[in-house]
Image 1 (cartoon, rainbow, N blue to C red):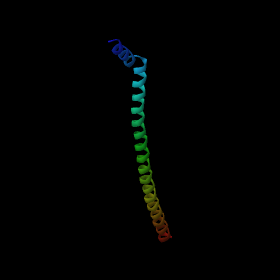
Image 2 (cartoon, rainbow, N blue to C red; image 1 turned 90 degrees about the horizontal axis):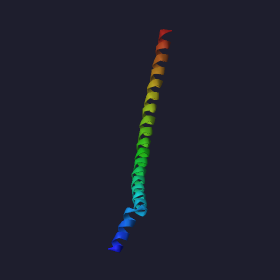
Image 3 (tube, one colour; image 1 turned 90 degrees about the vertical axis):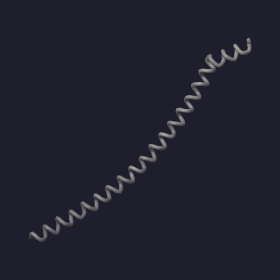
Image 4 (cartoon, helix red, strand yellow; image 1 turned 120 degrees about the vertical axis):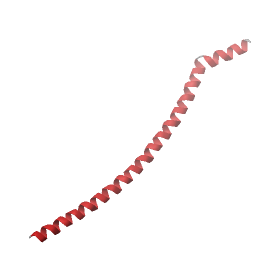
Length: 76
């Protein structure tokens, strides 16, 4: 029984708390790494969509500019 008490004392004492803290930290860091990877992936996708939208808008502004020039020439 003395040996069982020593084991329980170690498991429920500071050593057990340290082990539990390390395990929980390991789990949290694993989830944090997954979250960071997911955020970076979504950021790349957002940047690609933003770039595509800006190129589309730039083309539309260019067409509007040409149309305005054409209208100005016709009015003169």
